[in-house]
Length: 397
Image (cartoon, rainbow, N blue to C red):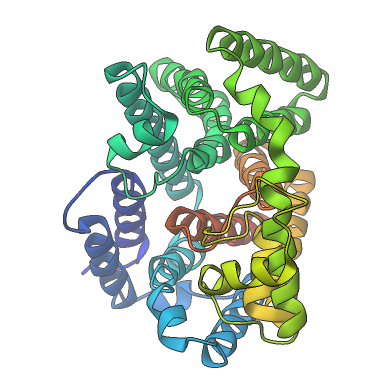
């Protein structure tokens, strides 16, 4: 048995993240994650490694407690509990990354795994597109077979992972590694434009510009303009399908948001229960009678396309407070790391904070905790910030 949980933790996390994109009949990545988690837990130094380094673990505990209480008070506890299974790998990832990763090497391996995940997802989308160029974005996403690509907007994950490619460009030791990391950026952008995801495009532009602004402030504006110009040019060649969708943003989202607010007003403390929005959305829209004012209002959507309103409706003010507290504490920790660390640690902290900012932004327009990848990325980022904080503290930063 290894003297440290580090090898098991890294192996489990890396295998799970990379395997997450693959269309497997058996959830082998989850099995590997579970096995490695058990091995890490039984290593001699596991309990000493799993120590609290910042306020992030307390915030995560608060969030999980609020989730459990809302589930117990749910209008359909069985439904809420059944769709909450994605929390298991999310929590395992957080514990392994935050408690068992020790030093820069595991973080570097984690960054490489995330970049590989982005490359695999982008390549699958582009392959599906070139197989049937005249098809529909939803069909291309479905043709990938990936369990985390369900709708075109799921390419937001590719946008969120772009800062990790930027970090590897700066810190990867070999020229081949730097070139490989650099190639994932245009490949990811092209995949986003092909499926016409406006939220993914906006997120991509924000997270990359933010990461560059913290590293090279003068280059951020140039980067933003270049990405915008390239995006418009590619979208123009495709007939401007992505830009045209911005005109209908309010029409397609407002009714969903109004329904979520109405649910919150009916259950302001604990909400209607996790993942129950889709069960009662149509009923609330009928009661609100928004169809006349918003002809494009959708009645059969399992999430409100706003992470914060979703949590407010499903987990009430307690859950919303827990979510906001977790995000704020994580962002504060990330910002402090960006200001007080140097060299590789600062580069990795900037990438992680940029992805977290992108997650918060995308949450305003699309994200949902019903999506497996949202929970995975959410807990992974929290674990990475907790890990980085511990490394910085050990270095005396």
